[in-house]
Image: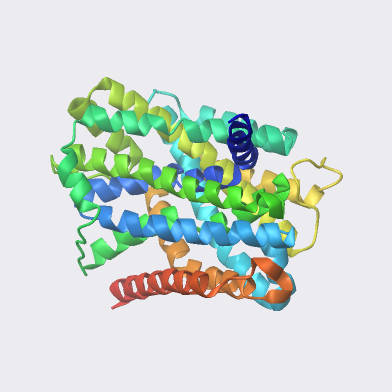
Amino acid sequence: MGFFKKFRWRYVLMFMAVIGPGIITANADNDGTGIVGYTLVGAKYGLNMLFALVVVTVILAVTQELGARIGVATGKGLGGVIREKFGLKLTMIALIAMLISNMGIIIADMGAIAEAMGLFGLSKYIVVPVFAILLWLVLYKGAFSRVEKVFLLSSALYVVYIITCFYAKPNWMPAIKALVTPSIQLDKDYINTLMVLIGTTVTIWGQFVIQSFVVDKGITAERYPYQKAEVFLGAFITDFVSFFIIVAAAATLFANHIPITTATQAAQALRPLAGEQAYILFALGLLNAGLLGVSVVTLSTAYAASEIFGVESKLDRKWNEAPAFYWIITLIIGISALLVLVPGMPLFQILIWSNNVNAVILPIILIYVYKIANDKKIMGTFKNGRVANIITMACIVLLIVASVFSLYANFS
């Protein structure tokens, strides 16, 4: 009996040792743009898009597992592996696509920080520079283990949105039924909103950061099964939270026909409908999501660019050991903060645009990932099997179909 207890505890401890990459990367999908995106989905279409959340969760789990597995197999970030496999020209296409999408997301997330603090009456001209400096210090001064702990704490704080949903007092049975009841419309507005749901959940930057996190954490082949389980858990947790955000918006904003275009409008509308506590929790959750989003997406961009150009890209390095890596972080945070401070900056339009760009370009990155996962020389025993290939291709095809519908709806 004592042997079996020790045996079980061994598995628990092994799982605890790998916690971080999957949960952090997946939860960072619920960044500031994600919170606004999910709220928009619930406000405009009620519970009608919840079925898509189930599909997106599966795609998120599959794509994140691929990234984690490539990281374990190669010991390198995705940018470096793409460069070795496809050469510099095709790699630059991937980098440019990621930069376009990521900068829009980071600017929108920085705007979410400003909006969250604005809900407490604080000026963005004060809070944005302060938080920009704090975020830079966390990424520059923190070793990987300390930064990981900060990100995990931030991920845990998403519980505020679950609590907020209960304040909204939704009808739970229709919400549960909507998860398995497809409701599809082919008009432009519906498709664009669906692309926001996809683009804010399954991301280009997520593919780069999950792989770099796994490498930075030093996950070995022996620990990979536990890492795989952690990645799947992270995908479930992130869309479990997303479910409550959409349901809360449906029960309040959609039910009362209240249109929104900003997080501020959503929070202010919640105040009389769900109470002061819901307003405060929404604001705190938005702040947390914005902070996590700016940090992780900035880090993802710095990882990818550094790997592609073959320079050092680890959080445990000092400035003189990884100058390009830290310069990228500094420039991204500085530029995004400055842009948010520009009067009249259309942050909501940037959010919609960046998520749609992400959803359209993502299949290209995933095709790169698919080909890498099937390269025996790169992957060894971690190469994709037949079942994994079928599932991966099904996910890529679904994303391509969604992208085609989006392009048709917007340009027809």
